[in-house]
Structure formats: structure tokens, C-alpha cells
Image (cartoon, rainbow, N blue to C red; front, top):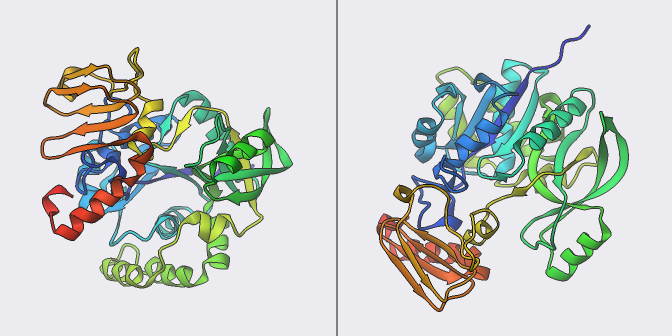
Length: 369
């Protein structure tokens, strides 16, 4: 009887967390901050899968500037399992690199892909769905993704349209992904919600490492050929040089653009659990606890936050690091105070924090990055 293939997890943790400036910085990105609980987001991500995938099978892909800080947060992960990219090239090269390492350990392995900085509100339901995806990937040649059942016409997420039923794992149906859609405008998002066969793209994937390698070779052949050069040097003194050479030449492209949107070989599972990609300060309005006026602040004790005095203020996202933050007559705002910077903006413009960072870089104010 054939034994089940080992399961590996790849946690993508290379992002700079720029949309959570000024709390998040280059050397302290959001994945190592206690944003959704009193524990760092990377720890929460690892803890959700720890009963299913042992630490020795969890790989984290990150950057040079973050690797030491990340390892301090999850010391149970072997240091050799932290894969360092010389420079960020988006998610396709990131997962290509991780696949090389997993394939070397076991070419029959299952690869589970998880972003480091998502909020999952129902960990048990999440794990049940993830195990069903693994079971389907074990016996098929599909790239499997989880689609989150939408609860509102969200314009900040990509969408996946459901196709025909491919089968079941227990009581859980498996569908073919009919189409991937980019972030829609509000009217189109309302249409997706009304139709009922569209899901939010969670960015969570499961596949056999060999199946992923074949898709990578077919749809991203130039990057694949460069990655092969790294594969030949893994575990040798030449690995670092090959890695830097490859990353200096390859295209920056996401896994969605590069592979998932091009292939018909994608299976979709309904992810019926609370999920949020925590993509901006405004997203925390749905995660942090609210007071009677709808203002939200992080959970935890007072050591994690300063005092806030809110008068005639409603529906605001508030973070105070140390100081007393006094607010009067504000509505639908983001207000963030840290040791050396303050951010104030409307909630519906919280994505534009990147514009602040662009200006800071232009002015050469590196101390604020």
C-alpha cells in the first residue's frame, strides 16, 4: 500500500508591510508585529498548522533584513528552513525557490502555501478545509486553491469564479476554478456577490511539488530555467552566488499572473471560515474589538498601547504606542501614533500610506522607513 506523501508548508514572509506604516517598518514588518492578537502574525500563522505540519516541515521565505527578527519569533523552526531571497521578486519566484528545497527533500511531497500575515477567524474549520485540499492534491494533478465565500462586495480582493464539480473529499465539494478576476469596482463586486459563484482569492494554495514544477516550467519557462541553476547548487558553497545571479535576472511576477490565471488545471475548495488579508489599517475595523461608538483598538493589555481619549469620535481605527492620544469630533479616520511618527488619514484612503513612504524615500529620510 502506497504511503501518503509528506506535507510541507511554505510561509511567505518577505513583504515590507508598508501599508501598516508607521508601526510597521523595513526591519519590523507587520508579520512580526502583534497586530491581530498579542502574538506576532507569523507565530499565529505557524500555530494554526502546527498540529498538522511539524516545524521541521515548515519553510519560511523572507528577506535578509527580516530573517533574524523572524527567527526570534518562531525559534522552533529550524534555521535552515528560513530561505532568504536576495531581493523580492513577488510570489512566483518565492514559491519556485521553496519548491526547489522541498523537491530535494522529497519529490513526492505536498506543498501548502500560506501568507504570513492573514487573519483566520475559525482555526479548526480552516484546518479541516486545508486537510481536505491536501487529500485532493495527493491523488490529483490539480493546483488547489481556497476561495473564501464573500460576505460583502469587497473591492480590495481578487475573485475566483467556480466551475464544474470535480469530486468530493468527505462532504466537501471540489470545484474547477473557471476564472480568476482582478480586483473589481464596486458595481462589479456587487454582481459577483449576487451571482453566488464567485469567491475571494485567499492566496492559499496546495499542490504536489512535482505538479507545481510542471506548471512552472510550462507557464514561466524563463524563470524556471534560471531556477534550475539554483537547484544544481543547493547545499554547496556555490548556492549563494547562484541565488544572487538568478534573482538579478528573473522577472518579478505573482503566482496568480504567472501561473494560476493561465492554467485550467486549478481546483477550488470553499473556505467557509472568517478570513481577512489584513491589507491596510482600515481592515482592522473588522478585526479589532470596537467600543460603543465603533472605534477599534488592538486587543491586549495597556503595555501594548497608550491611553486614548475619544470625544464625539466614531468609527475610527486607533493605535497609540505610548502617548495619550486625544481625539475630538472625528469620524471614519485612521489615527496611529508611534515613537517617531504619526499617521492621520481617512479610512477609505488607508491604502495610500504607500504614497507617504514614496515621499519619505524621495526626501532621504531613511530613519522613518
